Image 1 (cartoon, helix red, strand yellow):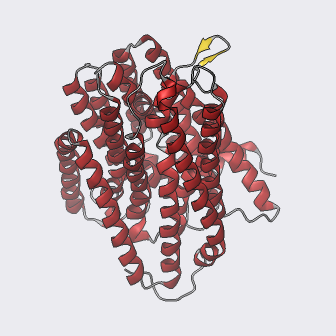
Image 2 (tube, one colour; image 1 turned 90 degrees about the vertical axis):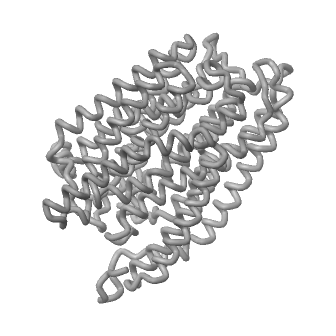
Image 3 (tube, helix red, strand yellow; image 1 turned 30 degrees about the horizontal axis):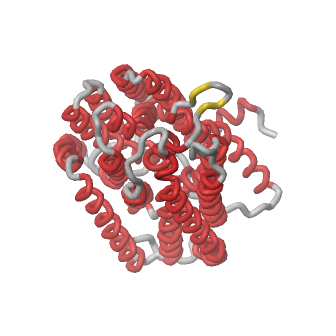
Length: 493
């Protein structure tokens, strides 16, 4: 058995640094993700419909721009350069939002979303490059890194809940500004070990590198005013993100059909099927900062043992479960596989869909058992978040690790960005579901309970149905996913 020192020494260079950078890089997103709807409705007087619409666009651009991050990183700018540039934009964005006006909110979100949209893919690509395609440690590394990200979420949600109860939003956004700045500091201290290891940019001449860097920087800066305009047209922006998602799906399908290497082509088909399943998962999951949060505020009894639970603290059920569960699942899976258990990507994706379906189906049960005031017991939303968290553990870090296993070298950035773009499309779809929720205030839970019952039931049974379909497709997906080349033909597109 390997000693702890031997295990630590076996970690690829840079992977440990990325774990800690991930924690601080997440803080700003955690604050906005958990607070934006409440800040917009309680402080800036947005209607619930307008607040959910802007939250849908927030998720759409944050995850949708991951596609551009996957394309720019390693082609025009190194992943570490693009990451730092994105973090600088996030710092500016959080500082703007702290100003407290609607205008500053829109400009702050434009800066923040440009940064977070581009740099998250860079983190994942920097990590996946530190493992060879056949290296089985990749999945464990992503589970650990995902735990680090959720440690950042845990801290961000906890602080956000504290300031939410005091309605001290300026201090909250300043906290997010400082947290994101520390991620830049950590990246600077670990600059040498974060270099790209397997990208097209490494083949560029010094002159080509310079010009590509300038083009990438121009795109980074130019995206800010574009996102600013799009944020003010939420419905149009949501439709645009969905249209881009459909277009990218068509392009990837064509690339898969044309790909010459049989093994890689089969892997790409498996990737497309699994990514489609993930779209269903994320559509339900991204209800958390929108419909689920409004449900928690207005329709749930948040007094537990005499303590008022801030809405953001409820989301810490998710963060804590993943923060603790990520490493435990990684260790557990390693032990089961050592005993011969076949715990592969298709089976994990299917289980995640069944779990999130169950997570939403407990909510209608809680609504049906609500008290005379119409408020559901806190335990039902707690159980829902716990089940969703278990599902997330089986699809998100595993999905990121899947890219290194299934993506040909030339499509690695595109396929990583596309997998994350799915969450952006899902965010728009979930905002559409949330848009059906009528305006309500605290104390009027009876008026909205029937609508929530219908929405949660539809999402739950829909996820379960797709999960069952994924179970049926497990044998087919296993045949498509191959580790060893079956053809001597070189990989080409």
